Image (cartoon, rainbow, N blue to C red; front, side, top):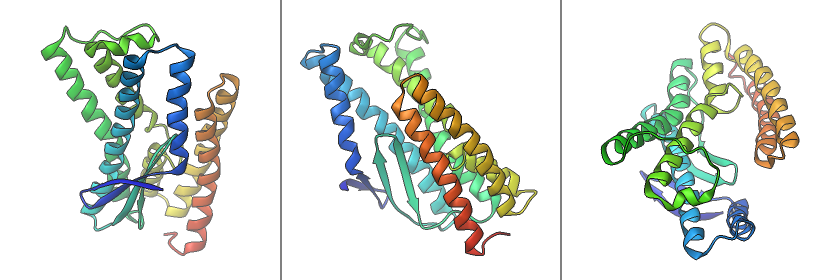
Length: 234
């Protein structure tokens, strides 16, 4: 992995698979016939995407720090980021706060962009085209950045354990049931959603969605088995 800096005492690293992002940018530039300026602007947009993902992960990490939990680092890969914490809060109310902190960062960015578009442009006018040329306009660029953060906010609230929404679901269930029972049902819901992701990803030819589905399907069961064998089931 490649370190790209440390902020608030938490290192940020790129997973080796991040190289596929560069391949993706190059492929889009060739397929869509982008010139140098368009390629640079598109690259900037992708950079902003992962910058927002990084801020999302810092939301988790800094909230966890309030509860005395250390985050070893933040890892960025083509399918997103992960804040590697030494542990998660055992108390459901604290896990709820740590889990929701990341999506709330994206919501805050979206609200900031909305305010900026109303102050410096003609308000919100979502583009109806998927033509990348819209990125060449500052207003279009920030509209797409707004859409990006709204998507990150909503997507991460999907109750697919161990995604943020799934952890929020587990925390809410754990307010009534044991942590193990809450994790079991969060896993079941997560695997159902993961199966839908995989089917849609294959059907609509969206490899990233299919990969996320496979990740959720595998990791949800792994986390449940780990908890079951850890003795921290109450």
